[in-house]
Amino acid sequence: MPPTSFSCSFLTLQPRFNSYVNPIFRSLSFQLSSSPLPFNAHFSSIRLRSSLSRPAETDSPTGGRSGALTPGPSVGADVQKIDVNPPKGTRDFPPEDMRLRNWLFNHFKEVSRLYGFEEVDYPVLESEALFTRKAGEEIKDQLYCFEDRGNRRVALRPELTPSLARLVIQKGKSVPLPIKWFTVGQCWRYERMTRGRRREHYQWNMDIIGVPGVMAEAELLSSIVTLFKRIGITESDVGFKVSSRKVLQEVLNCYSVPEHLFGKVCVIIDKIEKIPVDEIKKELKAVGLSQEAVQKLLQVLSVKSLEELEERLGSSGEAIADLKQLFSLAEKIGFSKWLQFDASVVRGLAYYTGIVFEGFDREGKLRAICGGGRYDHLFSTFGADDIAACGFGFGDAVIVELLKEKGLFLVNLYYYSYAPQHFCLGSCFFSFADFA
Image 1: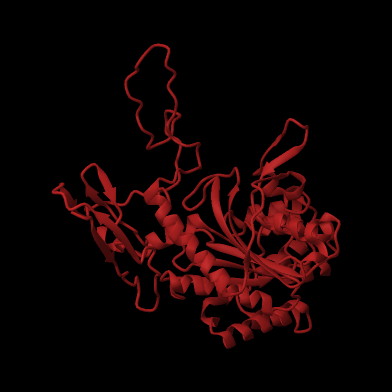
Image 2: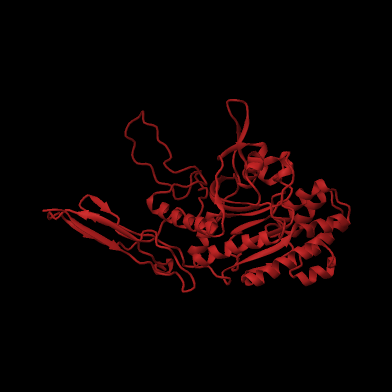
């Protein structure tokens, strides 16, 4: 008898009524032989154990990693046992995790294209100098770097923005401005692991090159809000802390702090919510700031409203004008409820020059979800002319933790068995809350 054609379509469930999820597999057609072979279709009740949402490994008292598999019995005296786990801080992506990763990355890419951005990518291995010229001291200590066989200093990229700047300079005038590029790439940093922080992660970047006005920052923030809405996150879950590096610069100028110390001060201020204030004061004094300058700086950084900032700095500065314009645009575009002013936000990378922002979990359980800002002087550090530029980085680890925390994690489960073979028939979507 001829084979029987069979097709099956599956619908998705919305994680929240005000959001939507595009189905990963809308339909799948396949053929089954009419011969009487055993066929079982079932969904197994499971407890999710995804490496995307699994907490970072920690060292066990015995020196190994907690959760590591116990090696089986030796099969011979000459067989050398190996640790079958990936290196500490890294992940495998078996099929069930790849489905989740692809789902998230597809949303990154769809939102980017919706806003007119083109996809690019760069080498994972770059010249070490690319990341040490202007990044700041902290990232220098976190580099995976080495000397290759040609005696060249190279590094695994810890972030994507310097690579973007290099490519823009390389292309020169062959690419007309403005440029709107995005990428989803793997990054490496040797740092202390915590929840949502690994030594390798994937990062979604969107950058606008050649637009000097605040409209560029507004477009970037709007795109992130669009992503959040698509995956079920609302303004009650997440917000953006917004400030400007120019606020810090105005304070330092009042006390004649040398410009070459600006990057170091930013790296220290970026730790303001991570270490005690007394430690912040000690580090600021250690780089050369006076007691009076430290006191004034910390007073300004405690400001949480534009009105109070205007009272302290006056209304004539560029920082106030830029921030007012951004909040006005947010009101017109429709995402002002997501924003709040916080003068302590400076970002840890030394190349930022203007408006900076961080996405944060309003419950305060997680580290920054994303961050970015303006970096108008980055290109000149590589020997090119300055170009107006801004962008953001959005890692995969923290957003997965947030989705799990909110019970919104999408599980793309499809498992059918047919004799010894497995056939993928469709997608099943449900919430982490189902397993509470």
